[in-house]
Length: 98
Image (cartoon, rainbow, N blue to C red):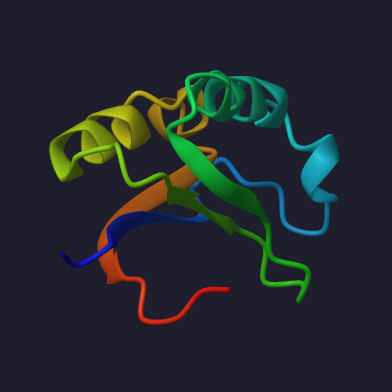
């Protein structure tokens, strides 16, 4: 059986303030809280921001989350809904793990 996860890739949206650090962006705490709720449900494996200056970040779901659930959850993110971030959900095959 294949281990398929869903990766939510976040990029800056139209409300993103260029030059402002990620944790100082208005609305980022609501985004963090939204994904923390997925983590407490054990439906999120990993998540966090990119550190290369381009902003954005990604979340990798747990095996027990469907694609439809991942898309619906990503679209309900308050930071996506207000335009701070955009979200793209992509299927990912876990090819290697320890």
